[in-house]
Length: 383
Image (cartoon, rainbow, N blue to C red; front, top):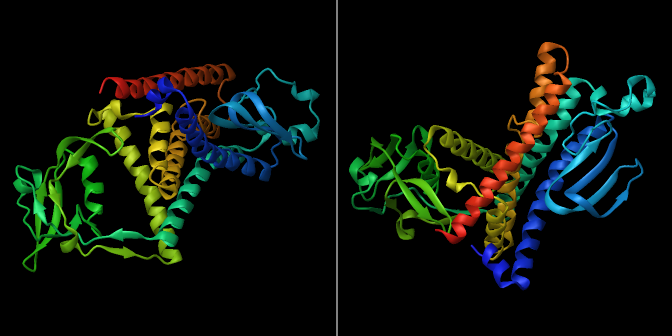
């Protein structure tokens, strides 16, 4: 990890890492907030500010609707402030202007005067925009670049591996994993990695016959090419290019859209599996990264070419969209919980309860950021 060492060394290296991180994060944050903004405007909500970053404004301008578009000093997020919001987290202004002092035009433009469905649509639009961005990026990659695929043929079975214990043999062609079709050898590690300790059923073709093999992937700690430790399930097989018929697959537009949508779904699925694994004790919280870790990963990917940076942007976009849907007050998911309560009960949640919930959500997020940053520091100096 180069981030912290570059601080110690000083010079352009540190600034370059920061710049690359800010560029990628700004794209993801801008799309997220643009989703909120566009759906809000379509529903007649007046917007007071569209901000990339927090803290003091660096530069900005007012549009014809008197919304302030600005870039701020702390590039770790952003927000759209609607008319009637008390702050950047869209907490309602419970102590604002009294209803009787508002004109009908002012009431029409205030977020809290919209129907529950409209408010929910505005809030959900940010994460949805992140998912759409990811689908577009993955689709573009498949359509314009394609990808290399190889037949799922076993060239080698490692000694004392889970695959050897399950009876895998050289030359086996893997057709299905837990009933899901295997189209390329790369599908295998993607399916196995999150399933350490769980029995999986592989359907393989051997000597012209299909047979089922039950295998339990072994938990393995692996260091990726960027020096990050990961705990994954490992099968213990490999494939050689001469056996696997490695080839470049070209995609038509509709096929690319389907593949891009599935890739986005896969990132969501894998992220949720990891989060579930944390609560069940299957996964380690040590793998959670904060701003330092993300900045370092962006820098590493940048060194491998712009295409990899674009793909990483898609993955981060999915992650940020999904994070914002968690039912934590202050996040979009927390707002959606309040609207669900209002729809069921028939009236908004008690203002005091909402205010305390927002404060709790803020403390929770700050605690998570501190924990994740501590993980980054530990990985840098103590691993």
